[in-house]
Length: 453
Image (cartoon, rainbow, N blue to C red; front, side):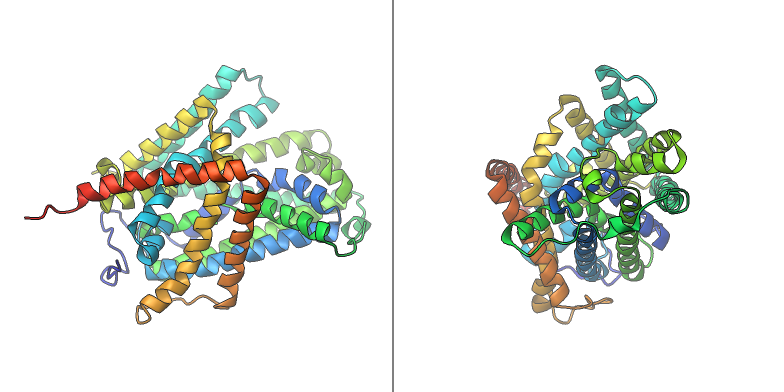
């Protein structure tokens, strides 16, 4: 299955111009990861582990595991800097069927469902802080947000990347300013960093830590999508690894900083009981206007995460169609804007339909099990490809190999098994939804197979 990709800095997708630089890779990662998670998840983590030391440890461990995953993805991205990212790595390691099932799940459930979730959160959870929004208006706003971002990204990858840069700078600045305001204006309590102490080790504590870790990894989700646009990155064998490194480490730092600010304002028990801890922290720093500011920050964060998905994920469907295993129009490139415009529009339309029907939350709950299996399989592809193609040029080799990828694979398996045990019906249903792609793959692969004379 291996394809020689050495001719054009590793790419077989010359129809898409290489116009994205290191800053774009970095902003795509950071801007897609930082959505609403850092404003919502701290309460769940604090409620699970109760100790502030363990709370911070969960965020650090989740970030380190994410970084280990990025290290492995960096090796694969430097080897195969093509449009499609994870799809390409799975195709080369395990064959077309496994790769197709990832793309199938991304299109019909995972990423389209994520876009729908973000759009609905934008219109129905945070926009009402400023204006009254009826259920119908909320649906219209959700669809409008998707439509605007689809139009921008169809217009050109540079336009989508520019929007992402602006929103990412806003997010980073907002988290830093929030933390600085808290530390300088609030008469906080540093005892909250260590009180209450860590409980004695026990099986229940380990289980609680695991639940909290799953929540933190959800907040780190999105770093992988930068690989989907690898076919449009300049000097990809340098910029993709560095973008993955810097991006994941910065997100880790920002998340820890924000949690320290939360703890400076309130003890872990209060964080666990708050549904809007960031607003509480800003309220303590600058008064009631702080809640309005945080709502604006979250709206921009959600818009940035949505834009990141709409910019990146259609490249997977473009790659699938070029392989002959998806709707052929998905492989088309706009003659003027040089974007996979049809794939972008199709992703937006399906996401909008999920938004209108309200089925996306259940669909996303179904596929957590399979989604993390794909993560584990992708990182395991480092081992498979090193054995299968030992002489293939590797501009970057995974730091800490084999320990760091094994730790990430272990985390992915833990999340998948935990999901299977705690939500067996959801997990098995999600696996069934993914396996529905098997006959679809058979249909498309037969159509793309040359006729035997």
